[in-house]
Image: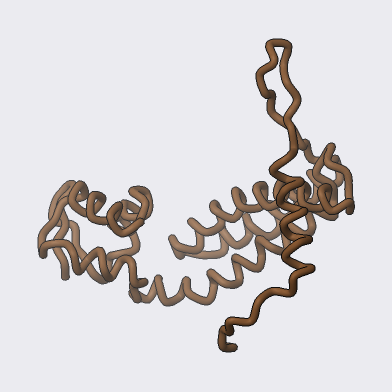
Length: 193
């Protein structure tokens, strides 16, 4: 890994980034008849919609059905949400920078969002085998360290929230990911192995 340094970003780049962000923040949504802010809609162009659907059918669904790993399957679901969000962010940024319009999500944006989504899949796939093999990440190691030998779902969730772990993540861990570290004693009660 390259070392970090205290070298400052060139002034021109910082000024350009500030200009772009100010434009994004300055976007005024239309107002309704009562003067209340209405939402801005960016529908998918026909081509962009077809490209996103193709990615889901040919890439993401194949990855989902081609594995028995719960962590890979969970990732597939997250990536579908990420893709849509990336489309929105990229289209707005391209519009602000004058590279496209901002009336719809176009094919280029869909392609860029897919590339970014696949980057995250590739990064996650590097650690998914370790998760499946029973190697805990630091947050779950800390969570187990903070719990008694025998604990309830409620206690695990309360402790997880203190560590910044969502309720759904800790419940998924208790259900699937912690099988090498915990055992279920009864409904809602677990014991460390």
